[in-house]
Image (cartoon, rainbow, N blue to C red; front, side, top):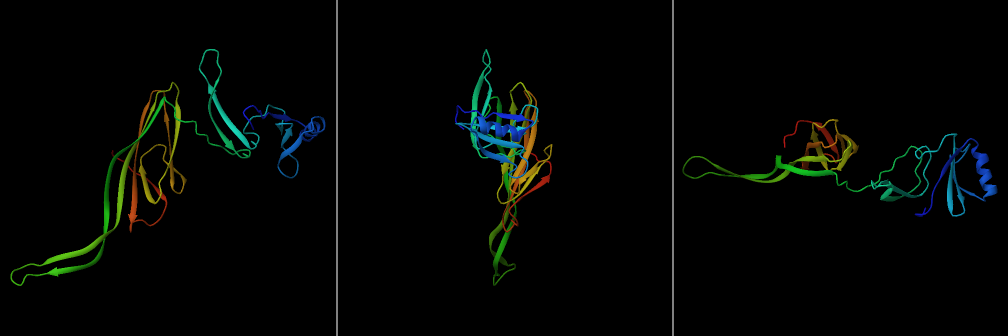
Amino acid sequence: MTGQELFPIVNCADLVGTGAFYEEVFHAVQTYRFPGTGEPVFLVLRVGDGQLGLGVGTTPARYGDTPLPDGVVRVFKESGRPGGGLSYVTQQQIKYIPIGDKIELNLGPDPEVVFDLIKRRTFRDNIVLKMHGVEVYRPVKGQGIDIDENSTVAGWDDHEIYTQRIRNYTPKAIDVEIRRPFPGHVKFRSALKPPPTLHDYQTVQYTAAAKPGEKLELTYEIVRLNGRNAKQGNVTLETAEVKP
């Protein structure tokens, strides 16, 4: 779809009859049918250089109740200028979106929402050594012995403590959803409410709600297992109080 092209969706009681009407009168060509077999509930017709969606129903059609064909999704917002109007925000090329599926659009930063990730502290522990042998020395005269160990570091845990700071300077409440990927064998520790979840095996998702003017600090700890200590390649969620 071009910037000047619309994609209207019309609900009708007799979908098959309405589709046949457009094909006969306007020489429309059917480009999509859902489902592919049996009685259709949604049709896309090509009429000249434009497209038309036909769905089953007697109420106004709404996006989300019907599939979206290939094309461009554009987002606008109220401009806030006297007299109203809309301002362009972003756009994204999409492929066919079935009924019930969701799409995510990057709307860019909001200047009235401050979003900072701060690394508070790092340290290392649980260090494991691999022994390659020992050498023992004893003086000919005198007491005691000296032992020299020949070893290398084989495993360790890196700890990183972060605080996600959110400042909501907008006049309305906002819901925040954060996803962060952590490759390798990782433990994610926090006392966040609601509890974090796994978006996938290496991505942590957590949410928060900020009231107008509210400032939030969400603190968590990442434990990265390295070397011999690493046993798997996914994230494990753990509940624990984390001090910055």
